[in-house]
Image (tube, rainbow, N blue to C red; front, side, top):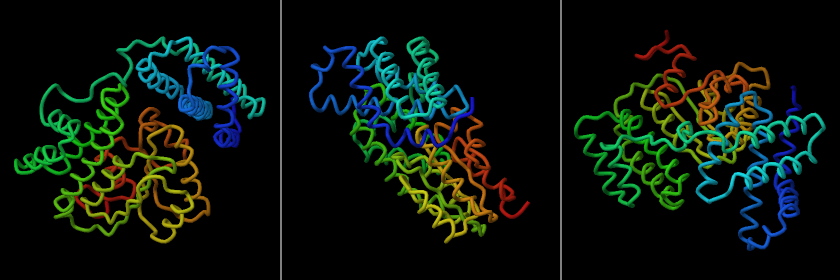
Length: 359
């Protein structure tokens, strides 16, 4: 069924109001539930409901059913940790669907309701073995495991020492990015999701890794021959996770590109202004959540809207891994799942061979 793209934007804007309506419906059906919430609990419950609405909206207007499966897997791990029953979770889905429908056209409401009904049916049915959010991403022992443990314990000095030892052994900086920083960041996210580490621990670990990456930067760019090409990189507005795209920018820099990394939460207008000013040969955009893919789509449309010969756009982040063809839907030129693939894709799109120079 075709869907009016303006509908999702409208629903994103009113998600908080719709979440308030959904909570009111939930408390009508479960009057004894409201007395369990203090003011903070009510605020968090409303935030959770708005999160459902935004994600269901994004799923409704996407073209890949994998997004619903992935979102429900993520929720299952989170809500099992809180001890929420399946019946309570699916009832909250139902209330979210009824409340959100009030803000949509009849056609869009039908599509949204279809997603909600599928979520109600599917939630709790998948086996833990198929849930990627429960699967460890690191080996039982080795460099990555030691590094991760040092970060969890708050030992940035020890984490730095582990990295320095690898450098002395001759491990390349690119290998550290691919085999150490990238997998440990993913594992940190999983451990936080399972409530095995706190938000503060996850934030500390990410900040420590960013600091350690900065100490390696002079080595990373020590020998590249400039190729005369420029790349700019930016994360979606509303995005809080930037370390993955920073790794991508560093890989391009190490390969001789002049890179400009703008980090997280960049407005589309600011991005377009920099594209016009810098005239890059490549643009890399990232979103770690499905709800932020709409920014990527808006950014690509804005970059290419005036009919000028614009730079190729590579996109990345979890949603583009979940749905391998999503890059086509947002109008990008390619997607990449890691730093090395992003670099190889960028070189291919502008006609550079792996040893520098035009093909």
